[in-house]
Image 1 (cartoon, helix red, strand yellow):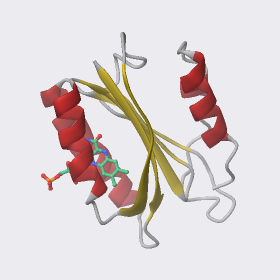
Image 2 (cartoon, rainbow, N blue to C red):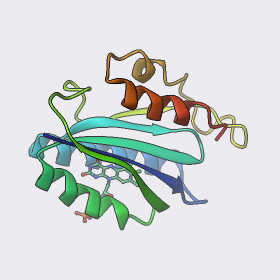
Image 3 (cartoon, helix red, strand yellow):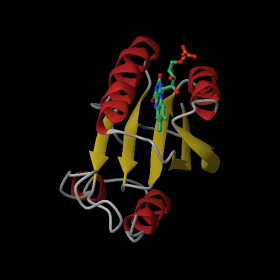
Image 4 (cartoon, rainbow, N blue to C red):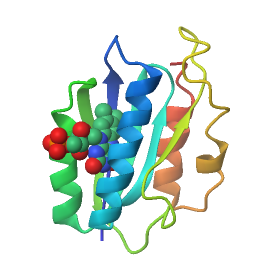
Length: 134
Ligand SMILES: Cc1cc2nc3c(=O)[nH]c(=O)nc-3n(C[C@H](O)[C@H](O)[C@H](O)COP(=O)(O)O)c2cc1C
């Protein structure tokens, strides 16, 4: 099993419809390839964690990197993993209101993710992202 986390910046014109399109595509492709994970959006930046067979995760990631709906994709972590943190989520989108766009990412917060049992080094990555204002 393989795990990858990246952070990126949403493009200026990103709409709520783009977000739901991304989620629809992600859920369909990921379930076909046995990929699970989570996508956080704070109104400005994305953080996504992908878990699955290494070749499949890297294939999907290579498509994600080229996606014009975001830029400046930076890999934060790549590692071999014993167990999945979100085995039940083929891709779960969690959004939070941002300072700049209070209504855009109108989800509540990232507590579903933050409260999930996971290794410390992953909690720190999610915890850092959770402190960004968006
Ligand atoms: C922030 C973000 C996250 C995405 N996450 C996934 C994902 O988890 N799985 C996936 O298949 N596509 C995801 N996509 C969509 C892909 O970038 C791409 O549009 C989709 O895989 C179709 O690729 P194709 O047009 O090359 O077939 C994401 C896109 C963005 C902008």
